[in-house]
Image (tube, rainbow, N blue to C red; front, top):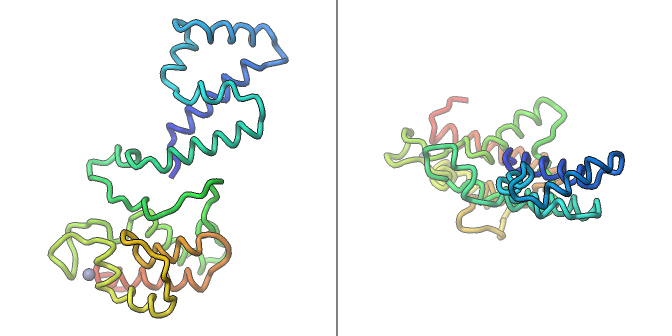
Length: 212
Ligand SMILES: [Zn+2]
């Protein structure tokens, strides 16, 4: 769920940083440095539209550059005001339940080899994206809008999973499914992921009327 706008701004800033330090063609590099000082130039326009430019363009060391880029992207991902702009619905804050690592490492649930694992993990990804038991207006079991909290309780998977895993580390806004997925985000945890996938299927049967 990376913000395209953030990535574009970073790419532009990297490009201008490269031009400013271009050794192959000193004339271009000099021209860019000259334009950078003039607020009326095209470069000045870029700077107004791209808040990352100032931060990135003067970093000299490559390692420092990649560290800074990761930091900017992480801040962008964690910005709760973004992501809900494109929809007319208010944010369900589902993304709040997923921690973002400093190194922006992708969760292991995004990678699979066998078809069976793929089926299970696709379920998990859909849950993480908020495509299951979101605030849907119509449902089987309650007249109010469906929520993830309702779904884990109503389907009984909360009790089953707590009984099996005795997960203590939990937060009020999280469901047991998110707590487990956060705890086992990295590495190989096929049996746990299978249980979470089972739970998602149960939720779909009891609250959404699926017959699978
Ligand atoms: Zn229900």
